[in-house]
Length: 208
Image 1 (cartoon, rainbow, N blue to C red):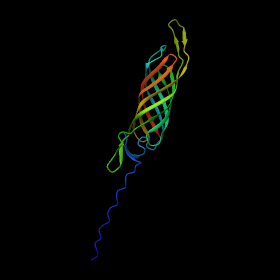
Image 2 (image 1 turned 30 degrees about the horizontal axis):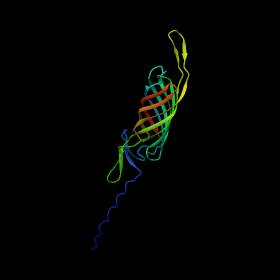
Image 3 (image 1 turned 180 degrees about the horizontal axis):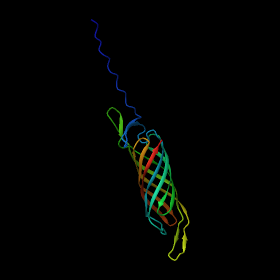
Image 4 (image 1 turned 135 degrees about the vertical axis):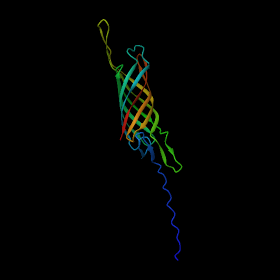
């Protein structure tokens, strides 16, 4: 009778990679990506719409205090920490005529990502963090006709602006995101005083 040989022990489980996370997306899919926010797609383009309102305006300001806003933005995620640099062009689609350019950055965290006992990371594609920006702000000239028929024309003026917002991002997929900015606090020093704007924007972002 031959000697009985026990079967070899099973191989040890492969350790979870430190550079991957199983991410659930609002579109229904679950994909393994890294880093959690950029998901291997560092470049992004966004189209946003929203509103703004003047919390404080210059002493000689005229016209309404609210505006309907549109913006285009593009940027690049640096490294794996959620830090992202961006540039954007925006303006008032309705309301006091104005255009502005933003150069800035935002740092987005992924609070739903957790680590299981076996070391594997998983979470839902929800990201939140602050953004800061600065750039030129141009109040465009406008024409006003008085009741007596006299026409007054205002000149365009350029100013420096600085501000910040709280960003919320939800992923439909690694490439397609819902992108929102809340607060949109902007300070614009002018010769009439400091213009202070607040608002919010919402739109879609495509990453590649």
